[in-house]
Amino acid sequence: MKSVIFLASQTSGTGSYWRIACALNEDRRLPSKYFQKMQRNIDADEIRRAIPPKTGHLLLFNHPPSLNLNMNVEDYDFIVNFRDPRDRLCNTYFWQFGHPTSEPEEQRQARISKVRSMGIDQWVLKQSNKSVIRRYYDNIFWLLGHKNLETYVVASYARLCCDIESAVKKVSTVVGTATTKEGLEKLALEMPENLGNNPDWIGNDWGGANCDLMPGRYKRELEPGTIEKLNEIYSDVLKNMARYDPDYAEYYLEGLN
Image 1 (spheres, helix red, strand yellow):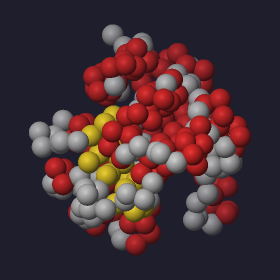
Image 2 (cartoon, one colour):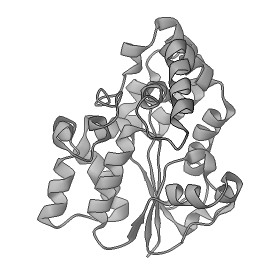
Image 3 (cartoon, rainbow, N blue to C red):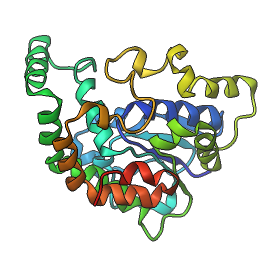
Image 4 (tube, helix red, strand yellow):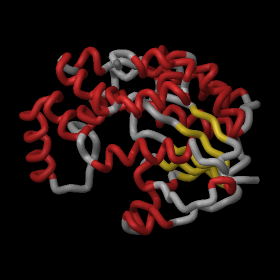
């Protein structure tokens, strides 16, 4: 059985999708938070050259910039998760204040203080110009546009928020179908209205995720001028997202010329 690679955004919805995929998978494949394990053991260049196990695994790879662009994509099945970059940047801004890190506490507090002093608008615009952010989306669309890509689904953040039943169906076409009562109960906990009672939901631990229940948070948190600049910077990314996630194109295309 081919391994399934879950290529995902680093955002709060990824955890829900991962738990859904694991529940649907049951015992078919060995689940592994593959990128996290790799990150602990080898350097970034080696990760980009590594070949994931081709059979018997369900692999979470939640760092698209590190995707190996020389892998034979036909050797794997894929679930691809992406999120509006305007929303993802807002999400990332708030995560910094609660996300655990390995840095010394004094250094961590100094970094947090600097980020707070910048404010969300200035910080978001600074991040949006980094090459690694551009590569984040370039690698996702490299995969989706690959001529040898065979079995895959786009399971977007927008779909998870707006229609979790169809999100589950998308994932099930690649991973399998949950048949046990326990598996189905786990999926019910991922519905937006139930997340507050889900002990595994990241929003119950880290500030800034608790408003991540629908697309469009950037409109509440950023100034109009900042949004205008982001629309320009990410115009091609947003149009590609609308192309690959047409049911929710209106969210991506809002504000674009």
